[in-house]
Image (cartoon, rainbow, N blue to C red; front, side, top):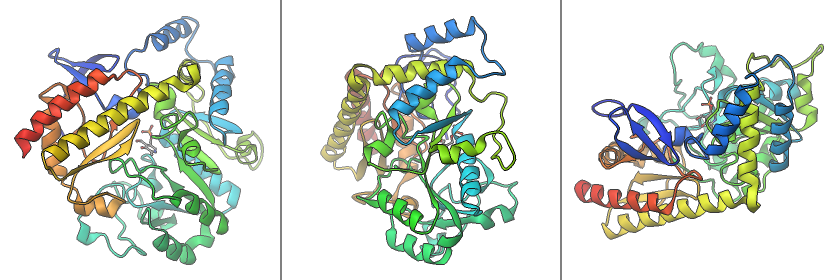
Length: 412
Ligand SMILES: Cc1ncc(COP(=O)(O)O)c(C=O)c1O
C-alpha cells in the first residue's frame, strides 16, 4: 500500500502518532476505527494500570464482565444478552453459528463487497475486481478472497449485490427458503463509506423474516460510533443478532454478539448447546477498559458523540469545498464519525459495482501519499475510511484541509 515502504509508528497521544524517525502525524486511521477515544486516553491508561495490578485475567466470571455487559445493554437496545469474543471476526463467526443452530438451516446470504472478518465462508467477493468480470446482478461471479479455503465452503454462501432490492428479491425467490441468515453491514465500510439507500436496511430485515432467516447486522465498524446504540439506533432497526468490535474496546482486542436471550442462551452448557470456547473470552482487563470506554461515551448526555459529529462534519464540509473550488472530480461520502473520499465522476457510489467501475483508486493513493508527506496519517487504500475520534479537534481539521488543498494543487 505504502511507497516506498510502510510507515512504522512508535507512539501515539490523543489524535497524534509519531514514527520511528520522530515524524509527527495526525492519525485518521485510529487503528482501523478501534481508537474511538484516541491514543493513550488518560482514563483508559489509568484503568489498565489499576486492573493489571490485580491480575489480568481469570478462569472465572468477574465483576468486570458484568460491568461491561450492563453498560453495553443500556446503550444497545437489542442487547437483551451479550457475549464477548476477542475480535470482530470471532463475533461474526459466532453469530453465524447461532443463526444456523436457531434456524436449523446452513446457507446464508452475504453482500458483494462486504467484509465480515476472515472466517472462511465470509471470504467471498470482499475485494474489488474489474467491472467487466462481475457477472449478472442476480448471479454475481464468485471471487474467493483467499487461497486455502475449500471450494465447498462457498456452497453454503448466497451472494447478492447490496443496496439493490430488486436483485435481492429475485435471489431470495430462488434461495431464500434455505437461508439461516442475511448478514449486512449497515454502512458499507469495506469499500470506503457507502450509505444505505432510504429504507433499504428495514426492507432487508423484513425480507429476511419473510423467508424465515435471521437478520444479522454487522456493527463491528459502526457500533458505538454513529450513536450510543450504533446504526441500529440511528436507522431504527431491530436486528435478530448484531456483532460489535473496534470502538467497543477503545484499542483493546474485543468483539461481541448481542441479541435476544432465546438465541444467545443456546450457548448455555448442556446437550444441544452452541459451542463458544476461547481462553481469552471476557478478558478481565479488556472488560474493565470497555466499562470505562462506555462510561466516557455515555457521559454528559453523549457529549462525545456531539464532538465527533461536529469535527467529522466540519472535515467533510471543508473537503467538499476544496474539491468544488478546485473543480476536481471528487466526492466525500459519509457523515460525522466516518467518511471516505472518492475520485470519480459519479455523484455517489452506491455499491461494490460502482466502486469497482467508477473509482480512481490509483489517484487516491497518490493523494494520500501527498498527505503523508505533510503529516497526515492515512492508508492509501481507498477501501478503508477516515475515522474521527473524541481526541480530534477542529485544529486538526484545519491542518488536514491545508494539506489537502496543497496536495490537490499538485494532483490537478
Ligand atoms: C464490518 C466488519 N466486520 C467484521 C470485521 C472483523 O473484525 P476484526 O478485524 O476485529 O476481526 C471487520 C474488520 O474490519 C469489519 O469491518
